Image 1 (cartoon, one colour):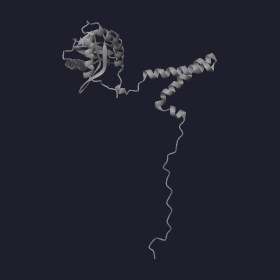
Image 2 (image 1 turned 45 degrees about the vertical axis):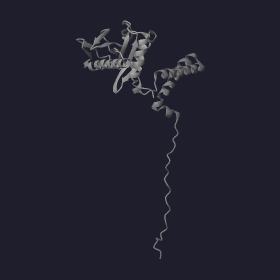
Image 3 (image 1 turned 90 degrees about the vertical axis):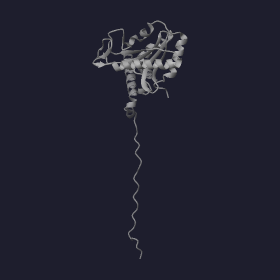
Image 4 (image 1 turned 120 degrees about the vertical axis):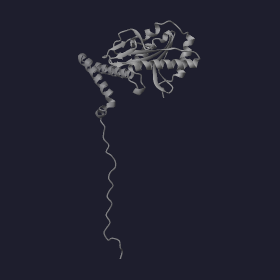
Length: 255
């Protein structure tokens, strides 16, 4: 006799379905996603323009034209005001304001480097300016406009209750290091004048030297640079600028 069981073998169960059902995605569902928010806004702007123009004029054609123009205008505006660069690599609002001012100095023979660092350090000079009146390090600061800015004994700078000595010391150190590195590359002494350009709160003075750092309202940055005696020739400007490009690496180099 066989020792195998005489009971009939059961059939294996059918495998469970492993595929996921495909969901149909509607246009309305897509537009609800956060990344398409700008499209929702653009559609509302276009619709609003169509209604504002088309209804009073009793013309759907004029309404359509207005919608198209509004959509194109919104597209251009967003292209100019948005950036594909990661936020941590973008200049701050204060830096952009200073950069726009400094750009106007180019016609007067000034050259500018932006967001330059130091080898082996996280410190950064927001703007290094080389021109007929000298070499300058400008750090752009956006401070809370609700807090007053004041100074004590021409040695202490306060923003509200906060002592800004560390910020002044940092600006002075950055300018000193830049002068040392550039001077070493050129084989002669280079003086870099440090400064803080402050945006936001009212600054109750024009230009004030505090702990060897010139402090002023950000809107005065061009006057601060140009209202000085000429001290550099065109050849010297080009030499210093070229050396600065070499010894002060770009803080956020393009990949």
